[in-house]
Length: 241
Image 1 (tube, rainbow, N blue to C red):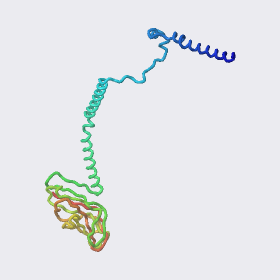
Image 2 (image 1 turned 180 degrees about the horizontal axis):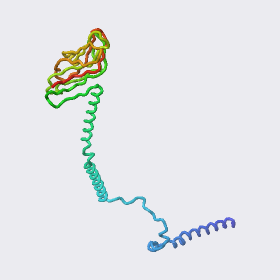
Image 3 (image 1 turned 120 degrees about the vertical axis):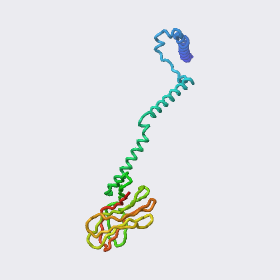
Image 4 (image 1 turned 180 degrees about the vertical axis):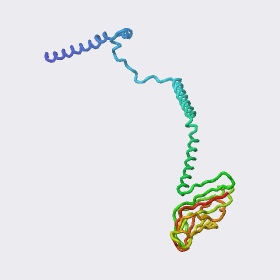
């Protein structure tokens, strides 16, 4: 019986000590709110921060939005006032015009000719390059792929007439070499042709002619009476005003 009561007594003593410490000792160490603000221990204790901050008021949100809009309007006005943005389209069009002009000049140089047109309506001359190089030796008229151009007479207002000029030769003195301008669009030859019996290059010129109205494609055709090879250096159309 004593063995049972002794452990029970020890348990009761421990329980009583814990209860005393919990309710009497701990409560005596609690500091009132007024005194806690004046003691160093309270300042040293961690302060609990709320998990969520108070939301901004509607008025504050409206003011922030108005400021953002004002800043954006200011940036847009600055961009509009910048010279580069204001003149960008004009500068781009100017560059495109220069590039187009350079392409035309390069094309003319590759063909070995320079198109020149005077602003004067009298005694002016313009040259339309047809191409350069190539040749053939057929007895029948054959077109040369190196010579192809699209011409609209309306682009030469007030012109009087035109002439075909060809610098070509035979590779040997045998027979006659001929050249003419051919209308590919209407499949018809332009009246007038040039010829040579020389084995040296030289310019040959047709008599005057006019072209049919409208934009049409033209090519150069050649033939050799004896089937001798023909060599062409260049060809062009002379426009007389």
